[in-house]
Length: 194
Image (cartoon, rainbow, N blue to C red; front, side, top):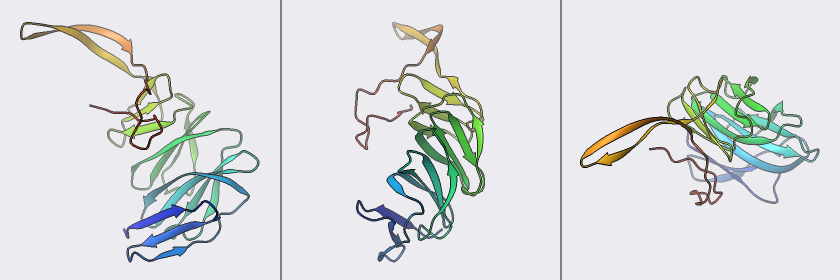
């Protein structure tokens, strides 16, 4: 893999790109009538994907096969709103929308809807390529099969210390999501696992 940096300039319709050498050049304009750029991610080799919102309000996934120089429209979410995306494995990308989860196993070339559970999540973290944790603003969600099924994350036990002995008390408490503290990027949307 050649290290690639993509930068989206506010008054440009393409990306500013730097590949290994440190020199920057301007890529081609993104296709369609793009209203706003939302997110971009490297998925494998020279492949990148980005999510944009068009002026009609629809969110689209664009794919680049040449380190961000040119882009193709590969998925229209229709009325679904974009939430977040992750690349848990080389070539696999998973995106959450207001109506569920989409996945691609070929670096963004084709997509399929894999779940309607835990829709509307705006933050997702991978524990392994199959175990994912997501946040929807109210609950913490957990998937153990790469995003195909989701369940509310629950606290297995609570307990008390008596002297130097921990006395666990089995519980089934649903973990709630709290966003009172800003994340590293300042959005208040982050999951800290430990």
